[in-house]
Image 1 (cartoon, rainbow, N blue to C red):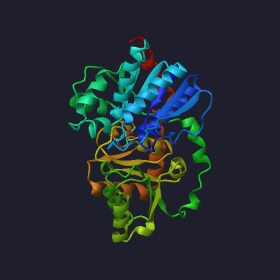
Image 2 (cartoon, helix red, strand yellow; image 1 turned 135 degrees about the horizontal axis):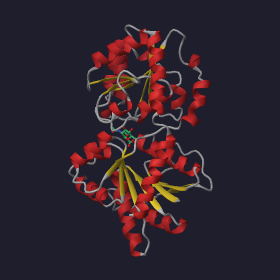
Image 3 (tube, rainbow, N blue to C red; image 1 turned 120 degrees about the vertical axis):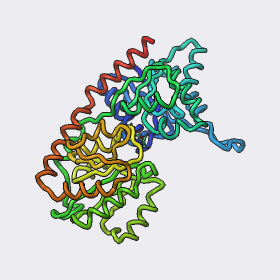
Image 4 (tube, rainbow, N blue to C red; image 1 turned 90 degrees about the vertical axis):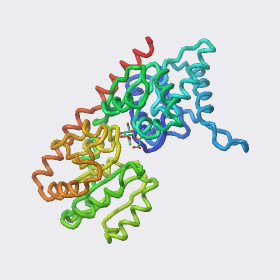
Length: 374
Ligand code: GMT
């Protein structure tokens, strides 16, 4: 099958999932064309079955806002015609599903039928999408997709509660490719980062408000009073500078390493003992799943899709949003009990195994086949 994938090319979960899916599809004999404004960060190779087409938006003095959707839909039309694309898969509804619909209509005018699958990832529904400025367009694009998928049951429910959806929504969870990352645990270089008697706590995100970075710092502040530990803060975003200032004020700056955006998340996770994800909203929590695959138990909030990924008492523990006191208490308990920590590490990996890529890719292929017949 020749498939076009539209996604954000950044470190965010939706871009990562879209890229990993494209890579997996190409390994299974499909031809995949990524269409976005920059080469996706996890797309390190291009070959005869993996292509990247850049969307350019020429500047013009009249434009206060760049018409990205327009450029994207034109690029889609062009790519579909040049490469004989059979199916379009857009990740994150805004503005991709809208641009995809426009491309579909333009192609229809030229006698080409392009089935479109839309995957909802989270904030496109729970945060940005439900804003009155976007809601009508998002509702329209969901209802005019040939097939719609969501990354968790919780996100499906949120979508049905938020929009007047006339389409059925299939839940296809995010996934992880175990075979690709096995070696990271084997050549883990922990001694470069910490002493043997130190615990390593990690947080990875885009440092937006929804991630509750203050809570990450607060939990760590409490736990480092009881446990010899350091905190690895991976990623970047609007809350980073404030978080750095808080660490200075609390006198823990020497124990907190802000590593910025990184393509080395598995190398960092391989030596981590605990992962913190206290988000205010999380449709799935791909970062938690990546941690679990690397044998890192997760202390998270219990919102959205997190309980579908981080299983209470098995891969980690879940608390109400903002309950930093209990998050810290549980973290301390876990980090002080070597036997329990080892057991939770094994269990975290076992739970992550349920999200191995093979099953999930086949679920997407089944949806593609359905869209092609629609
Ligand atoms: O977390 C973000 O804000 C980034 C966002 C994205 O579009 O990349 O993540 C969303 O999609 C991920 C992949 O499906 C999910 O794992 C995240 O839980 C989801 N984020 C939120 O719902 C806040």
